[in-house]
Length: 284
Ligand SMILES: Nc1ncnc2c1ncn2[C@@H]1O[C@H](COP(=O)(O)OP(=O)(O)OP(=O)(O)O)[C@@H](O)[C@H]1O
Image (cartoon, rainbow, N blue to C red):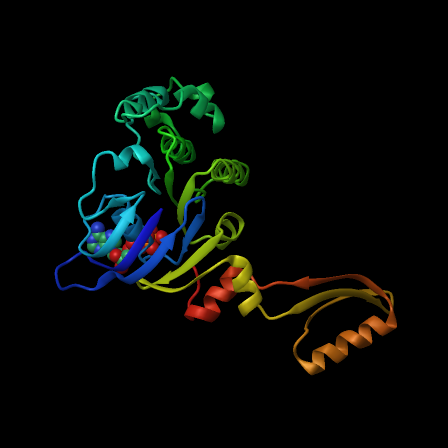
């Protein structure tokens, strides 16, 4: 669905590269995550893939279209949800969606249905300048689904939303993906990446450091640990022990022998811990 070869992008001629020799593919039906801290080059890459920024150097195809010469038909096939909401404030939510759907030459989703999906149907006739940030974000999000996109670009889809709404948004992404929509998701939130993505790319200073599935990354980089809770002298104690280090393995055997275990489970590394291990930097 997406191929990117030797992609470079600089905002100023001769200036530093915001994206530096990126290479990746996104398969049809995949949720592919771009995970990296602020300024890593995520939005720049998404901008090039969606035709918002010109392709300066490298080869990029999206849904079969060469991004060197983006064609109008391509915009019928893609959906883009921006991090910053850009709804027209003087128009109501419904008017915004009605206006937007006219830009497409393909069948579109009933705007009321979209508003219902994110709990905005009761404010359908309210001007969006009166909306909270979270409401605007939800509107931008559903607007990006209006043309049944085959390829859906989501920039920080849950940032700044309360947990219930964030969870709703994640469920919608999962449902649409299950129906066959391919998703390119940029985020600095490792929980979102871990929950939604089949594969993630770690990006930092414009460079992709690695690409793999969250599961493989955890198996490859995660140290095997066991968290154990046990009773000792009528007191609940907790320890996290390595299954690799000899000393800690012996300690675990000792605790098991005493037999006062309350709870024991293996603990996997988080994507953020792995990100730090691989890149030497955090996600914030
Ligand atoms: N319009 C612009 N003009 C000049 N430099 C820019 C512009 N937009 C981004 N940059 C620079 O390009 C680099 C990559 O920025 P980009 O916005 O792609 O990162 P990001 O990973 O999306 O960050 P965030 O999560 O904060 O959106 C940064 O150094 C940024 O300062």
